[in-house]
Length: 301
Image (cartoon, rainbow, N blue to C red; front, side):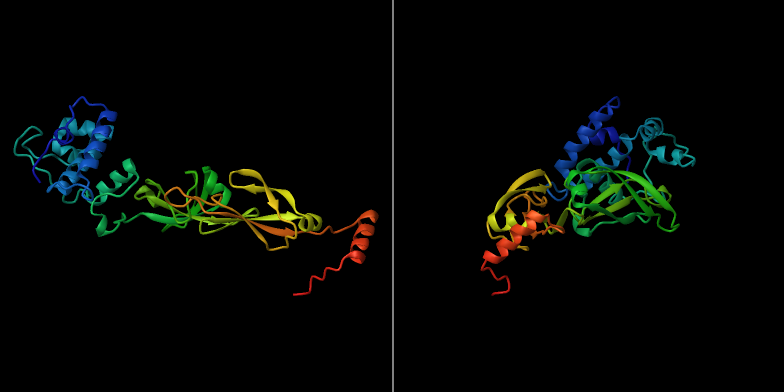
């Protein structure tokens, strides 16, 4: 591959700031992404701009590149550059043995900037050899709110226990992954946390629908009431119709867990009629009078 000046590839001056370089990369990456661009040389251009950005975004790599041109990588690895020197028109890149994969590394760059996929999406994801994936279980409420969490996991290969602080995006969904760059075993790969939503004492999730127990008294069940209910967005009042039995569900549309695309599932309040374990003398007297006066038979079908 013949030498191409990285600054020329991105179309920026050698004095360009990091933010200017990143802005230019974003613009070119969107223009030449192989999945959307109609340009004949889109894939090759996309690789070139990704390669240039990978070097110029890093202060240490950029400094070596500014001094040694295409031989910066050899210098960084303690090897001698070719005798023709950094300014020669005969200089060429040699990627053999340097650990650079234009598909894998560029995909990583693109994911970091856009949160999406890189080129050649149809070829499938090419993980680095030492990447690791582990399950990260969160309660429904924790996943919905997001925030800082601590994860404990065993490092692949060594079994050594590790702890990491992780920032969980709000409303992350079951099965989604959080990528922690360079946190796999030995720091030579990325750690992927695969999210698992776990039901807790308050919320149970099925798909994007959320279920919450609504405990009411026998009197409330018979006469109806407006009962307080905890939802993912805070407390609300729910109207319980008269004659509600245990197992009845009250549906709150659009109050469930977020789906891909922004819509939300539904929330179901599941009625649980709870009777008192002990009765005062007055309560017992009233229940006995009710039993004597009532013709209701719960065993009739």
